[in-house]
Image (cartoon, rainbow, N blue to C red; front, side, top):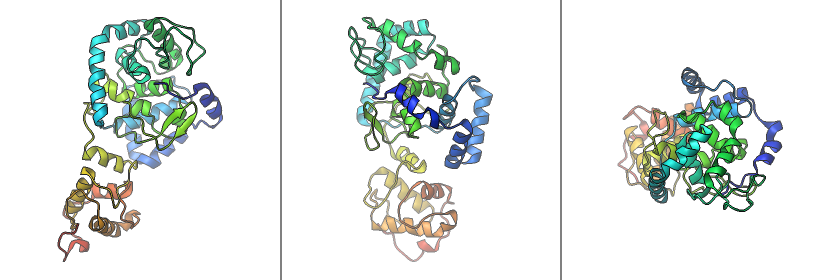
Length: 350
């Protein structure tokens, strides 16, 4: 599918407002905490940190170091089916991707994932943007030669990003997850980065992405959800990433949704229902608050949440009965079966 980002204009429109690496670090320290950011940076410097990254890719890379360190895979039913098809496609056409890999010194599994994002692995299309071969493209980039052979077009598309490849010190053997994520975002365009929005091109099908998508050239919708799989879940499924995270394709479950609450991407409130609410209710019970575990966020659950928030106002929690990042984090840190006046004298409530 075309990316619907006019990459050149995105770069030009935002070049004057590109944040420095120092500003990016400050923002991430505020979001993740200083110790987490420092630990991640030290770990990355000890493993592989490209030395020649220039703005804006130094900031993009640092962002991905943090994102891949906490990634969880969670695929919808349709994405699970799509992933199965993608893996089968990889095994069937591996030699073609490895042929392009030899000519460009780029990872074959990454090339396959980019191809799937652009055209669901259609070898009759340009790797640049998924338009049909044999005629001038209509989606960006349009200023390219007309190709009739997929391999030739793919080599051209990847060579257009040779500067980024060199900055990231990437080769056919690269498995560094942050480097691959940075390359994928650069390949698609930095529109999401400049909006401070996780790129679905990179992370759809993981807890790092919830919503937001370019629906036409230069037109962004914050509520639209990208249903395709991102590059990182696909390369991870092919075991092409060196990461401690479990990249096995798996369905969305309660712990996956809870991780989105912990990261501030999702709110649980009255009217919500599902396994993630059941997990919330279990955590409230374990913290010593009386609530029925039924997966329904009803008035009783809202009351238990408010009681928990009242008891933890000294951590800056608002008493509103809504579970966001702050409340979820305190629940995670709350001692099991704590002594709480809010849980005494009442039977279980819904």
